[in-house]
Image 1 (cartoon, rainbow, N blue to C red):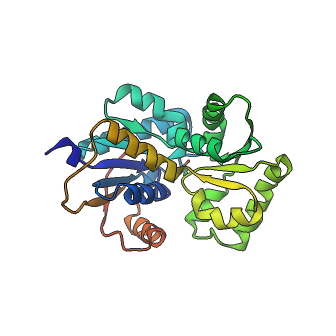
Image 2 (image 1 turned 90 degrees about the vertical axis):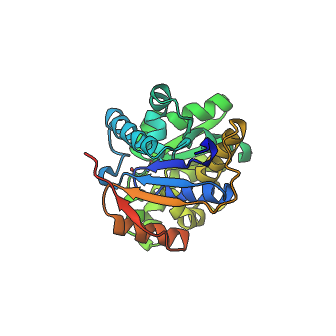
Length: 267
Ligand code: DGL
């Protein structure tokens, strides 16, 4: 098989990374894609760096077994905690979501005040803070972990009154701070965009997924890895637990039936 015909592998701690899958599929419609969701070990956002790195390493091994040509670490927590390690031990080209999100935030901020929200692990790692300050050391940044957001999305309550009240409580610090840009530093948060947008009306919301897709296209181009086969691309979904639930949430988010979701045994 020609190397450019091989699939792009995407992994996340669960279904949230489907936001990244959607953008990559949209921008690179000719590419074969394999999506792997480690639903059994979700959430990653409350785990230690060691645990997330161990799980992420297994996820990469699984995708390499599927002969992927490129890996996208769609999970913000895994990108923040484990990407440098993964890049060191694996030779397959790889990208995460942090740098792309930081770059997009810098492009739209006018007052140079940026808010960042994510899981506890992502925020405590300071990965977004470092990535943003590397781009512009003069930026003023306020970060906040919003651990209640992921379960609200998982429960299908992203548009509920509870989600609104929770968001109001978390996000008021960004109103006081007068951030003109907020980085949604977690795969699940784009699901909450309508609720967040209602509270932070004038704030630009950065969803790293679209920026990540652009970065992936650029790197595949540079490495001459873009698929130029006109045969219809294939998409495959694998999870470590609850394939039916994944299929339901994933299909509902994408707006079409995603087809079979395969269950993988993983310790
Ligand atoms: N995928 C995770 C992230 O983007 C959110 C869910 C989790 O905690 O596993 O940080």
